[in-house]
Amino acid sequence: MNIATHPLHRRKGVAKRLLCHALHHAVGMGVQKAVLEVRPSNLPAVALYSSMGFKIVGRRLRYYQDTGEDAVVMSLDVRGKT
Picture 1 (spheres, rainbow, N blue to C red):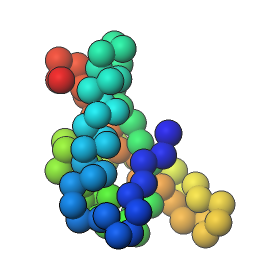
Picture 2 (cartoon, rainbow, N blue to C red):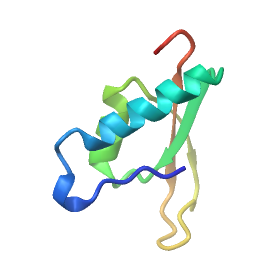
Picture 3 (cartoon, one colour):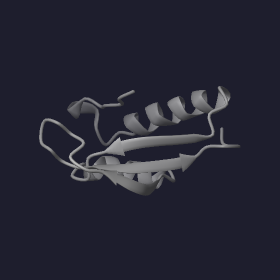
């Protein structure tokens, strides 16, 4: 799944609300861990995920085909969170 915010609506909490909704739904389905990949150059996204408790757990080399950029892998234990 991809979550994106239109440029005119950035910095208004939209992405955070979308991610919170998706995580809440996932917890309701019994998901225990959320894992995502993000471009390390996407500093606003990395900051958002970090602020929500995601931790860097790895890196996928040359993950993005369009640029050859690596992906940072982040994980969040969602057990017991709603």
